[in-house]
Image (cartoon, rainbow, N blue to C red; front, side):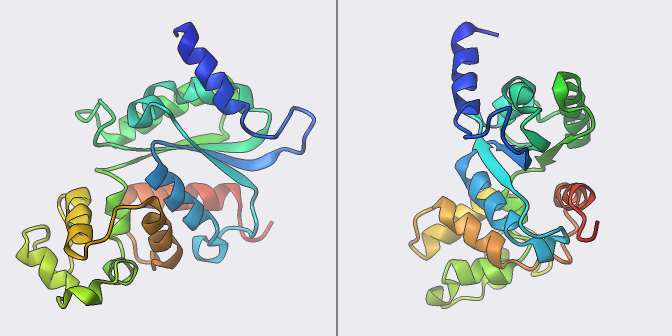
Length: 229
């Protein structure tokens, strides 16, 4: 790895106030962008909805090289923090990671093997969202509509998605979730903002979400931080 890159990663890791003598925190989450950062923060504050114990201590870091950086170099960035956190979670989008022809399962397995070999053992996991974070956002269109103040458009959100060709019916997610979300924001004249992702994460009902990446996210957290110990 190049010297400049190593230096940048070390500085990012030292941004945490933890030291080797500090009390170890529960979780560090490495994500690909700010939208994912805000969504994860919104989710992790909902311990009851996630089915985990309350008030876990966590930090969320954004990789400077986005999805490819999380996929290829997360183990380098997180290596020196293996003694400072009980668990590590790496999250990225399948679209834009640079290895879209490889299945998300294989990408996760490869990344987890590298994390394991770099100090984390079985205390780290990877979640590759297929195709991208917006697939989770559309898991609860009702609350998407609330966060976007969709009423102001004068249209039914489900009808609009079908009319624009983003979804086949009211019961299906948009085939291109990111494009659909951007177009929805444009329709209500709202700027795309990371805070919207957090609002959706804080409000959404994901009890019936069947997305495989979200299910892994959920089951992993429940295994690490069970409600009753």
